[in-house]
Length: 107
Image 1 (cartoon, rainbow, N blue to C red):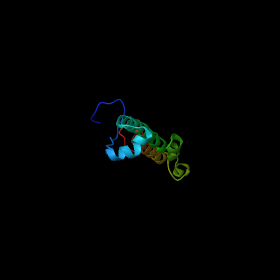
Image 2: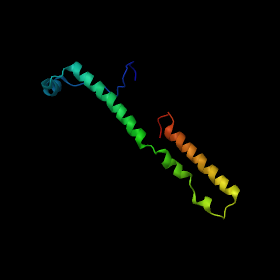
Image 3: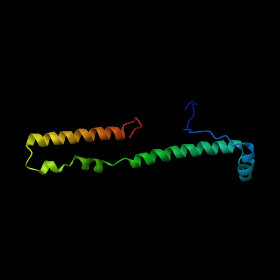
Image 4: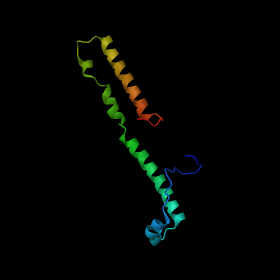
């Protein structure tokens, strides 16, 4: 955003006067009203997109299920090997959580 505004703005719509007369003036909207409408819509849609992104991320119980490994119940593995498997699972989970919930906007 180049401009200092108190609300997020994705784009500014420029409507030709012919279309403005045809569609918006009959509803009682002039250029100022339409600009306010677009700004409000953009602010609301930005928040809706943020909420959708948050809800798309897996929840903690789903992430914790990834810590389970059937190899840990097998008696073929020694305690050291089982501990290495656990540490590997923890490291994977840690990197996944960092990627999903970091403020970088990725994931």
